[in-house]
Amino acid sequence: MDFGFTEEQNMLRKTVRQFVDAEIMPHIQKWDAEGGFDQAIWKKLADLGFMGVCVPEQYGGSGMDYNSLAILCEELERGDTAFRTAVSVHIGLNSMTLMQWGNEEQKKKYLIPQAKGKKIGAFGLTEPGAGSDVAAMMTNAVRDGDDYVLNGQKTWISLCDVADHFLVFAYTDKTKKHHGISAFIVERTTPGFSSKAIKGKYGIRAGNTGELFFEDMRVPAANLLGQEGEGFKIAMAALDNGRFTVAAGAVGLIMGCLEESVKYCHARETFGKSIGKHQLVQQMLANMEAGYQMSRLLVYRAGEMKNKGLRNTRETSLAKWQACDFANKAADDAFQIHGAYGYSDEYPVARFLRNSKAPVIYEGTREIHTIMQAEYVLGYREDKKVGSVLPGWPFG
Ligand SMILES: Cc1cc2nc3c(=O)[nH]c(=O)nc-3n(C[C@H](O)[C@H](O)[C@H](O)COP(=O)(O)OP(=O)(O)OC[C@H]3O[C@@H](n4cnc5c(N)ncnc54)[C@H](O)[C@@H]3O)c2cc1C
Image (cartoon, rainbow, N blue to C red; front, side, top):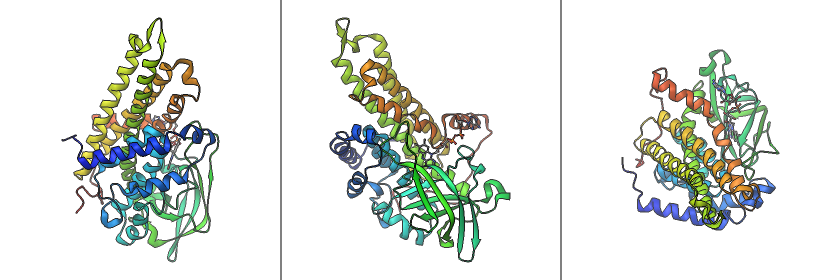
């Protein structure tokens, strides 16, 4: 595998980095303190063409490869986890799922405006009683003429108040358990839909997260994604892409921790020398560097597999688990290196630490990924062929 970057990818990284430095860094502490998602930033990101980074040109995207999406996520999370999370749900969980499972009509109606950044997509899987245990969901959809009637609730949904379109998962036949779940494309403007943000979040405060409610909400049968009963498979395939973006973002967070820690090590002295000269501080920096390099390799390997059109559930899970754990530890160490100053909002490390926690939980908790990896090794889990595949790159 070749992990060298193309000129186009280097240019993308430079453009995102400049954007983050100019448009996010100067304001992020304030946005984080105030809470809420800044839609103006989203518009600027969309105007730069980032919302369709790995979507084929025929569907309104830039036609770049999947590792370009990783670059975008890495650089965005160096700024703040909220913006990378938004890209994870919009591109990774929603648009890429439409690319993989949508029919032509659905792609034209929903994927094109999302890739152009004119509409925002999100992903509604989690419920109050169903997180890791997806099949415990209660939301149901009953066929009635040309519609399905949805009733239920989702929670912890990123971009709940902001997104125009949601992929929503609901039971069409509860007796079939996993095989009775179906996926629907839902528009915010549908009567019976409402949303409400969760207040008082520990981290990702510059993001919007909350609940969705469906009350006798009529969704046209044309908005069924894939076949009835394919929803669980679709959700898991979506997570292969969402997790990839989360892992890439974690690499960016480690990068941010390293940058801030190195700066502080050169600036702060104790016992007559820079704190960077103390071996125990060096240990923390060395761990960050190791985590950064290892996570990066895992992420770009998974991206390369996506480019080749190969199933990558196992590799993506490993990348997501390890990168998020490394990022959480790097943020803790970056905070430690800053001593008491880490405790104030004068430095970004407290925000890094708070932000680093959700990625260890969402899109498969640390424990779920640990179990997955053990099961692969033991031969208890095997990835079978799925009905629809994410198109390999270059796109045909
Ligand atoms: C900021 C944020 C944004 C989110 N955005 C979205 C979104 O956009 N869309 C969406 O659908 N969801 C979203 N989520 C929800 C997220 O995906 C779930 O929180 C996650 O899947 C875990 O579910 P849970 O919180 O219900 O925990 P639970 O599943 O209840 O788990 C609780 C604890 O038990 C452990 N556990 C559970 N089962 C096992 C097991 N079999 N073996 C060992 N340990 C186990 C878990 O690892 C965890 O430590 C978001 C969450 C957060 C925090």
